[in-house]
Image (cartoon, rainbow, N blue to C red):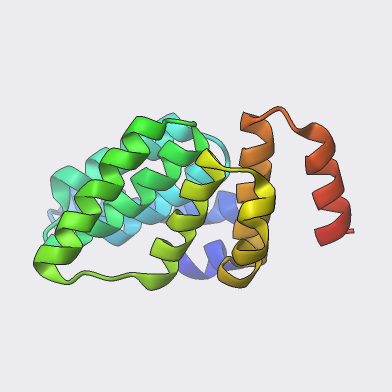
Length: 168
């Protein structure tokens, strides 16, 4: 699934991860299924299937076996909250992550930096965060954040201009 996801064969990646998860459930495998579930959630989030993403994140929360995994689940939940414009949930998750980071020392720098950009995108004008986002985010993440920002703020002209600048 990981190779397919990285190559952006999302349908095949989803099928592969779902088959792996079914094997895990059917055979009562001792392995922690969190990576599979987070990857499924990420793929469904990318496809704007936020209900499916939340379903797999809920499964991950109930089945994770490694304490650190909950931090990673919260990262993905915060990304879903950003994309669905749920500011309250986004802030709540960031606060939980901050506590976990202070208590346990967890750190996923890139994801945390992306969440900082998402936070700015929820609260400020694009001119205040776009340049920093270009240095922090992958091209795919940058375009996704700008797309969501424009969608939430009804800035379709800005979205078209950004597409022309960054992609065309």
